[in-house]
Image (tube, rainbow, N blue to C red; front, side):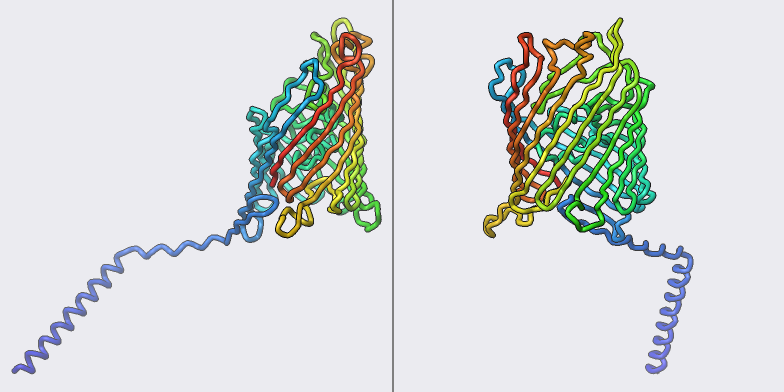
Length: 424
């Protein structure tokens, strides 16, 4: 009897287990199927490079890069008896820069600036790279014109740019087509822009007039290994119409030395022209730049074309034997005292001059007792490239004038610049 009872119990237990399993299966069948696991995202790399902090996809088609330029300056004016300027320390530039690439061809560049007690957008543009021969840029960017102006602020030889930059338009809003031909032997830029004053930047148009800018730059020996491989020759022009405000021109110490009289205005066509050249060979670099601006100026009943012009010649020598360049200088032996490394040292010198058209004074459009007709400057400079990203500069500059004072010539400007720079 006990055996029979045990068998009955086993059968009953099996039946209950089967029933429970059937119920569970039926319940699971009534539930929706679980969602498939998401496809894993492609790998992303994060890196700190000399060029900046980078986040990008494995294939490089999607990229986000953070850069920055910080420049802290000291300006000290000697024998400034007229009190035209003040000795000062200032934050010359403070730019967090964001660059991005989407789908491998479409680039973003955004550079606000919080230096000199102001907040503004220096650059903000989108660029489509259709091919090496054609890049389309739309937004706010540097006008394709001046040789020194087109250099990055972090890469110029001297603390402030030379006198031709007073004529060279700075940043403008518009559209630009640019490209490189024959592997970079020839580069071109052509832009349609709102139009800005000489040496100035603007975000908004002040009239219906527009400026066109065209620049070509030839490196005829780029693909050779001869001594002229680093030679570059360029020509740039802008043309259009300007109404209203007229420019002022400043010394290397950023003090105004020329302005038109009250009531004078721009009133018609304006053309600019700039032949330019540079040369880099080993530790030596040379740049030449000439800029000319012709503007129709009116102060009733007089109207005339006024032509202002400026030029500069500058040379540099990396005495530590490092390679000179219009872009970054990368010390072969970056600063590391434990290894006896002190970075790279560079000596530079320049001569530059600005001449105002005599017609401005002859026709009463400018006052020789308040504005100089000519500024002639020379400067010497020592750059210490501690690393690729850190640089210290000491710059001496002297500028003499013709006219500009009630008793004759304006007082000579003699000054000393200091700069500490971090750029990546």
